[in-house]
Image (cartoon, rainbow, N blue to C red):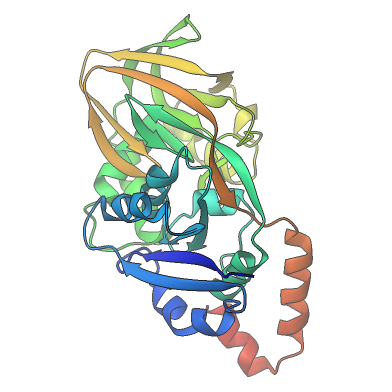
Length: 320
């Protein structure tokens, strides 16, 4: 049987720096009896999309080795392809889609998921024709995405510092929102379009979002007293933000938004600028992705292996 060909698209400056570990170990863990592979490094914004587009006819899988931005770029090149699947080695700051797909954050375990080669078809979506696969939005999270994109340090801690500082200064804007034609006029702290449940780092913007139901979860968070920020943050991380009186979630396929100002937004955490009107659409079952079909089994195996090692090695693993 002929080997399947994989293209690994590596973002050398992504997130946490774990891509360096990937380079060291992937050749030992990848099942080379089933796969042959090539490796490409991204050199500029948008490069991963070009690489994945070119790969469609020659590879059965393109694996994004990076964070949410790299995943977004690789996905853009594969949306609508019936013959090429996207895999993910999550080495970014948030890893939102990877976490929703139950992929392990450990690089070695993530490569094992590639070996298993279990795939499913998921929805994608667009804002004014620009694709996203996980979560997009406007308001506070978009404001932070624009600032984080030019920050000197990456990772969840620098992101949290920026968000904490900017929260006191942020002024919510007013929008006219039309969900399947139904109007909502509101001053919004944020408006998110959730294809999956979380932003990343287990921050659940829409805990019950389903990634292949043909619908987007439109998350409308109204302006709220700043003294309630701590409670809302807790709800965000314990999967209860949908229970807040300040949050309304509506499932839809088609949304329009109008503003009096040009709109700052983000697509899978990547900052973008739009004019005063947005049109958001769902693209059902438009991307094939590798997912973890049995996360409990994998976690149990990982724990069993780890517990059999000396403490000195356990400590090393915990840092990976």
